[in-house]
Length: 113
Image 1: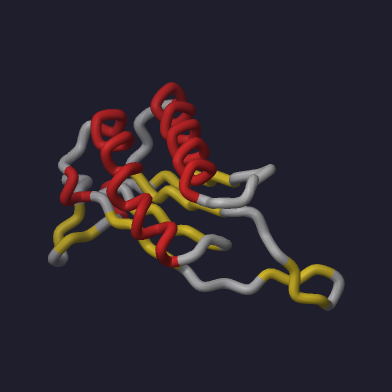
Image 2: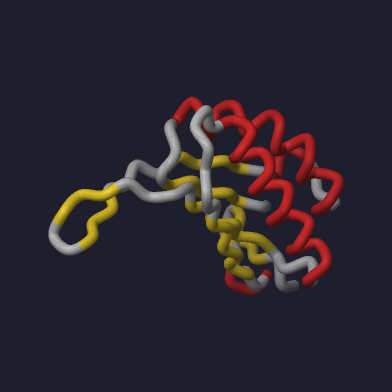
């Protein structure tokens, strides 16, 4: 179920990451490859009334796998995003949102049983 949402990157960047990053994350998260989703979110960032550029922002929605795995996933995401973006990127934000099985449903059945 890991769901990765990307902002402030191009769609083709997410497309490329959906292969290379999947190869990195699947063994770390120990779940089937088919459970991963990669989503491009078009977004516009503003500061002091002006449109501004933003650094890559990756949100990871997942069932928490502990701090050690979280650290490794953040490192892998940051490394791969920097690799695929052509210009130098000073910051890459990776934000984790932990999901609870009883709040996540597939076909009207939750994972918390």
